[in-house]
Length: 226
Ligand code: FES
Image (cartoon, helix red, strand yellow):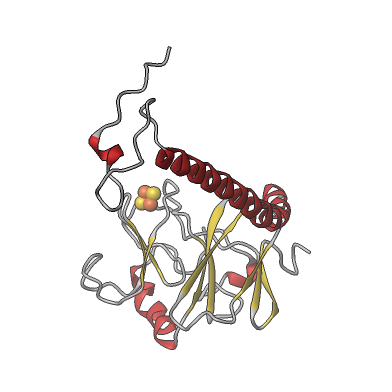
């Protein structure tokens, strides 16, 4: 049961002019309160209406574009990537079959570092590693400028960090640049080739991919799998 309204307090009796005239009532209820409540209700209704309209306009295009993508992902459909704005030395990340895929646009210096790293590698020719035939070369790519690689460590599946700067002391002073997995210290060069003496047994995996145009890559489909 509701308690009776208390007698109006001093704050209820004070008007804008501080005189308090005309604000008190016998129920401890004021005209000002009624006006405020009415205004509040109006604002609540307006907010709810705005929210509903917002949801209707925002949700429809979101669902329309999201549903086919989710279905495509579940089926392992290829993923097309626009690389037109990918700067030399930069990396782009996408998801394919629930796994991260990295696309690195390698600079001439990055490609030169592959020669420096070769003596440090466990499988420089990618004999024991997993890649399509067109990526079984020192750059591990069909177009040496672009590395397309699964960002999943071949040890226990962590996602290594990009450490592109040669001599990065967070890895080692003689670091040629590449990827470093902080989970157990595995190292990979800028072609995803694994270093000797680390827990990861093989190079990072290269997925099937193709270039339908100079500015687009399709991950998950190539001439061999088509
Ligand atoms: S998961 Fe990468 S080193 Fe263990």
